[in-house]
Length: 75
Image (tube, rainbow, N blue to C red; front, top):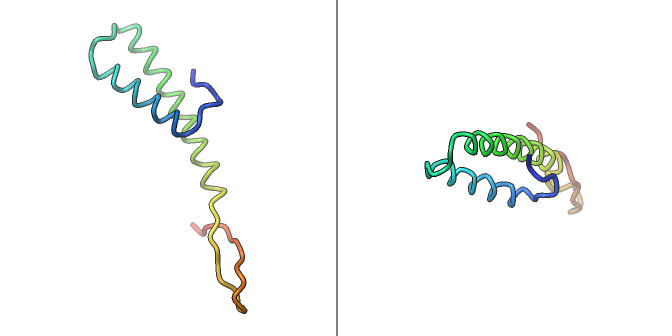
């Protein structure tokens, strides 16, 4: 299971590390399945973090008079 306190960047690094181990072919089947499960959990956590970050993204929009306001990104 992934650690909940990993940053998005750390999660991506961990995923890359797991992928390297799986691609090497040097890991037995049981360990490979465990690594795959860990990678899937990390992937899900990354997706949640990305969705949360996307909600925070704001766009500055110029108003009349030179002021700026923040608006959510329109999809």
